[in-house]
Length: 214
Image 1 (cartoon, rainbow, N blue to C red):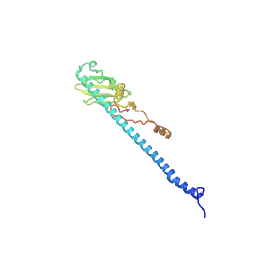
Image 2: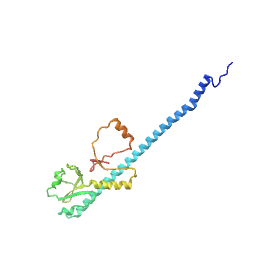
Image 3: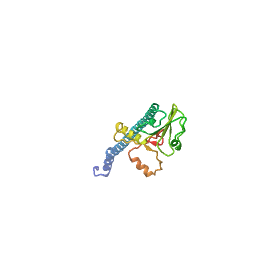
Image 4: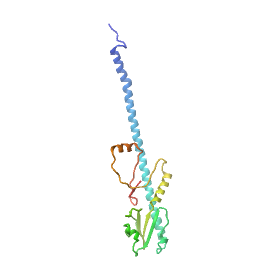
């Protein structure tokens, strides 16, 4: 007759399996669950951040286009009030407006506009053009017996956007108006590195700023 004790190999093996089953395995499972939970939480947080960024981008774009519409309205109002025979008196001095051209309908179009490919306006609604020399967008419209063209001052628009951001956006968020740049193919290493950076979202704009992005 023999008694199996702690020093016995069979008993030690049983204790080892018991230890593994009751301590080690649950610990590993809990660790894996914790890692998975952290990853899911991080993914959820990133999704929320991107959603907030898209919301801020869309709100900023809406502000930009409302600002341009207001500029167009102010240009129209001043042109209507001015003396139609005097171009100087018809040139509104407005922040966001780089230049205004006003000429009678029966007079040849402004040479500067013809030179950059901007046609003569023939309707009341504003039509936008991107000058062939790469300068800021030009909008044209007809108002009564005169033809009007006005050019956006992108620098002033950017200043307005910065002021809007300081007032309405979180301090940690930076939104800028940039020209559309060519995109080159990235290597896998570059993509992996970019994925580690802070999330950045782009919003391509439509006319009159459709050669730019937020």
